[in-house]
Length: 149
Image (cartoon, rainbow, N blue to C red; front, side, top):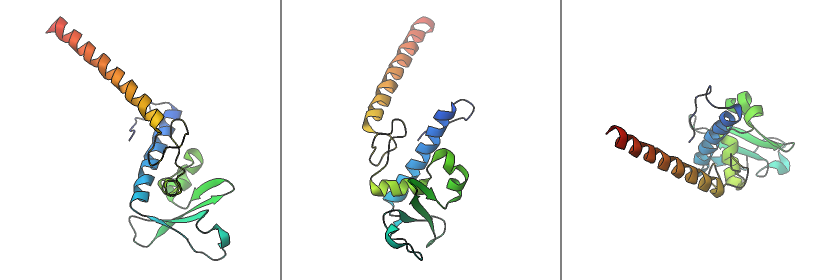
């Protein structure tokens, strides 16, 4: 999971890191079976199980946040979404529902990601970049050892 120091990352990188964190937590909620549908409320009609979901709280057994698709956008009743929802577009509860529906997208490129925060292509690119950085670091360390003992 990405960690960041807000002053050292660009706004876009900071946003991606926050989204990745929420998607990761949402995947964990989904894997632990925290999705409840059909969520019932008065007059919910055909929305049940398609655009209206309950996601159980971890801290209060039996309580849940409501996740709903309205006007083409997902919304959640949790405090995190109320505070950052417009900026991030996701909270861990929305991510859990998207995982349940098989609709998670890569936080880097937007391609389908399955039950991951990044797609296989972006994972491969990151692994290659890390391998190149590791090799360069090892070469620099070897050169330093040769020069300075």
